[in-house]
Length: 387
Image (cartoon, rainbow, N blue to C red; front, side):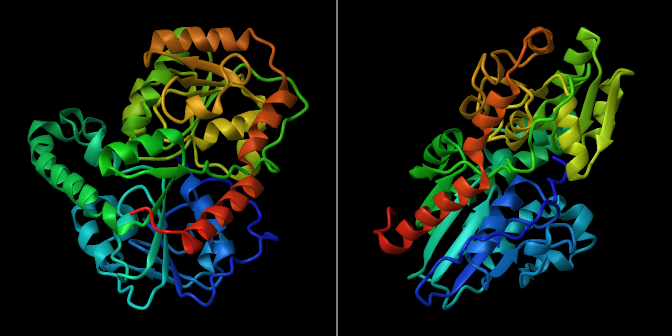
C-alpha cells in the first residue's frame, strides 16, 4: 500500500541485552514506510547498534529511526534505476541475498516477505525470521502477478518456470532460519504448508495512540487503504461502490493504478499516498474501510478500528483474526462485487460503538508488540533451536 504513517520514532524501549553477541538485521528492501517497516523500527529500537542489510535502499524513503542505521545494500543497488525497477530484478534476489558476508555474526534477525529469510548465516548463529509471508507470487499468487492478463500468454509462460524455480529455492532455504515468527495464524499455516516448519505468532504493531476516534459523524464515502497491486483485488471494491452508488476513496500507490482507473466510476477518487494526519481523518470520517483481499495480516483494518470506524473485509486470512463480525465490522464470504455491495449497504445502516472499536484495536498496540518481540527473541537466545 501507500507509505505508512510517519509518526514519532522515539521510544522508551530499552535495548535487548544480547550478552556481547554481534547482531545484524535483514530486511527485503527499503523503499517506503509500510507495515513491514514498522516491525523493523521495533527491531531497530531493540538493537540500536546492529547493521541493516537489504536488497535495495532508497535513501529518505523510510523513517529517521531506520535511516540513521548503517545500511548495507546488495549489488542490486547498483543496477539501473533500482528505486523504480527493483521488482524487475526478482530473479537476481537469491544471488543478492546470499552474497552478504555474515561471518562472525551471532544473531541474525530478518523481516521477510520475499528473500530476506534466505541469508546465509554462520553455522553457529541464531537466525530469527519475522515472516510477513512466504514469497506470495512464487507460491499461490502467480496468476495475480504473472498471469496472461498481466504479461500476455507468452510472457506468463516464460515467467512460470522462473517462479517455480524461486519457489523451490524459497523452500530449500527455510532451514537457514532457526526460529520462525509469523505475523498471523494464517501466515503460520502457510509457513507450515510451504516450509514444513512451525512458527510462533506475533501480530504486528499498529499505532493505536495516533489512530484514535474523531468526534464528528461519518461522511457518505467508503475507504480503501492499500497498495495498488493485483492480488489486493481493489476491482471488487470499485465495482461494489459503483453498484451501490456511493463514493469510494482509495489511498495508496502501485503499478495497478492505470487499470483500476479504467474500472472506476466518477465517484471513485484515487488519492495516492497521504500523510499521517490526513489518513487518520479519512479513517475517522469514512462509513467503513473496505478490504476485499485475502491479507496475510492487514494493518489498515486495525488502523480503521482504532479510529472508531468498522471494516468490511473478506472472511479469509488475517482479517478473521482482527475483525469481530457484527462487533467491529462485517466479514464477507464471497470475493465479488454483489456480496461486498450488500455488506457495505448493511454496515452504513448499522450504529457502531466507536469506543468499543478503539478498545478492540488496542490489542495490537506497539507496546504489546515490543514486549512480545522482546520475549520471543529472549527465548530464541536462551532456549534450544526448534530446527
